[in-house]
Structure formats: structure tokens, C-alpha cells
Length: 370
Ligand SMILES: [Fe+2]
Image 1 (cartoon, rainbow, N blue to C red):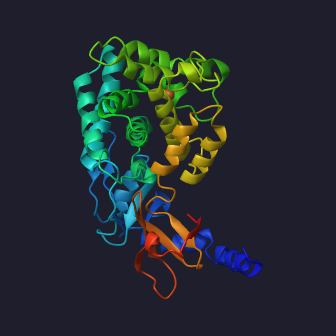
Image 2: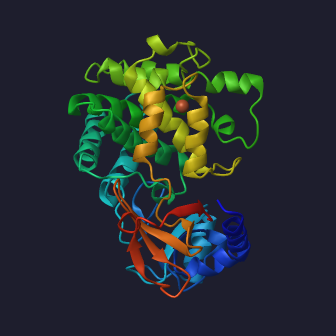
Image 3: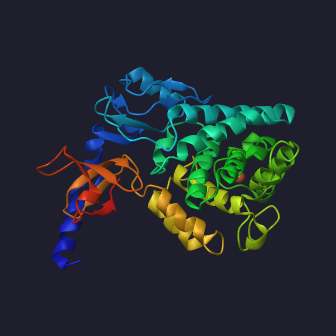
């Protein structure tokens, strides 16, 4: 980059400091709830803990809605200037996503109470997900799926969706995808046998607490293999998702040759979702930082091929990201597929105009601002 260009870029970055970005919040963004004002519109459905729709997309947010959502521990919402602001679609429909959350939740409750599962329900939801994700051109918009207050069920469903996208790109057939996603949806089911205070602890776990947490893959495997109608390979997804290629994982310290391919896929989906989620003890990472971290950890920890496919199926700039373009203008991402990124300009003489990045060969994203 020429010195002058660099100077322009630095200038632009100063001008578009976070304070300025906040002012664009009303256009269409994924925002921390504290920055959301009355009168803004919800751009995505807000789901309750049971997976049902709590507030429907297009709802005008009132003071009491915002207060209630804060009390319910929602930290971020998708908001728009008008109810029609968002045009993109996620990898699965809201209905299937809601159904998947309900099913994972019911499975966990049932496993904790009766040590059993309603497998047909899980298998049915896996089928729904496959039907939708098998369509061409779907990209995983990671932030889109974070519109929920309950991490456990949400995480399981996210890992399921991302595993299917990875498996599909890695050319698994439908039977294999189904075996894998069933295991992915239930990969953390063994956590229901670990005390809540440990799972919800803020800050570092003590050594004995960590030892307890490390038992959840074994607990999950023991529960799942007791169901003969479930493929043993699905049970092994739960058993092996914390193993690592160099033998540093748990519970058995398996090495690359000993870990099943499904588990190699699901562990990448699991780590990526954990990194980009921002639990209460840690800030969420942006997709490109999480990808860079996983690439640095492969091949010691992860299958390099799975990690390289991940960068093709997750959106580097998810819907709602604010980006700086190489012409020093700022835009927000309003739609992403495998082949195109659609932007809406936030600055310049064409402010408000929408454009497709691939149709403008000279236009590039310089960096993500928010
Ligand atoms: Fe886990």
C-alpha cells in the first residue's frame, strides 16, 4: 500500500471510530441491547428458552419490551430501521431452528430425569435440517443464530448446522450427514450429569471442577450407546468431540488416526461456535479471528482439511457487519451467500445504495469495523 493510501486509511479509521459506528446503529445492525433505543424494529424473531418465538420480527421495540428482554438476559438483538430491512436467509429456516432448539432442550431434560432420549424427534429434526441445508449456496451467518439467551441448546443446534455445512462441503453423503448431525445435536448431552454451578461458573474452573467437566463426553456416549436405534458412530461424536489430533484432548487422549472423521468435523464446529459466542466470561471473537486461531492450531489439534473448508462455509463478514471499503467508504453487509456479498453504503454520495461486491471488481473490503 502506498504511503498516501495508508494515510487515507488511517484517517478513515479515525473518522469511523466506534462512536461514529454507534450512530449508524439505526440503519440495520446486530447491536448490544444497551445501545438499542425505543422505536427501532426487530429484524429477526427473538426466541425464548423453549425455542418458541417470544417477539416476532418486525416488532417495534418499546421501553417495556427492551426492559423485559434485558431481564431475560438477552445481550444482543438484530434491529432495523424498517421492518423489511433484512433480506438475507440463514442456513435453516426460523421454524426448523426453533424446532431444533425445542428438541435439544427436551432431550436434555429427559436425559437428566429419566436417562433416556426421544430419538425419533432428534432424527426428525436432523432430517429437516438436512433438507434445508442441502440447498446450494448457503453460508453460515454466525451472528444470526446468536439471537437467543440460552447458550446450551443454542450451541448444540449451531454445532449441528455448522457440522452439516462442513460435512456437505466435504462430500459426505446424506446417510453420513444424518449420522453425524444427530451426534452433533447431542454432542454435549452428557453435560446434564454435571452440576450446574460448575457449568455456569464465571471464571476459571479449579482442577477438580475441570476433571468433572471432562467426563461429559463419556457420560454422553454411555447414554447414547444405550439406544440401539442410534448409530454407534453418532454416539462416538459425543465421545470424541474433545479429542485432539495430537493426543492432547480428553477423555481418552486419542490421536488423529484413532478419531472418527465425524468427530473431526464436529470438533471444529464446536470450537468455532464456542470462540464466536462470547459467553459471560469471555468476549466473542469475530469470525476471521476465530478462523485464524483454528488455522494456527491445525494440524496439531484439528484436521487441516476441515479447517480449510470452514473458511469457505462461514461468512467472514456476516450480515450486519460494518466494513471499510478500499475506496474509503463504509458499508454494512446486508446479504451473504457463497458467491456474493451484498452491501449497503453508509457513507459517500451513494449513501443508502445497495451493491454486490462481486460485480465491482475494483471494490474490496479493507477491514471490518464492527
Ligand atoms: Fe463438549
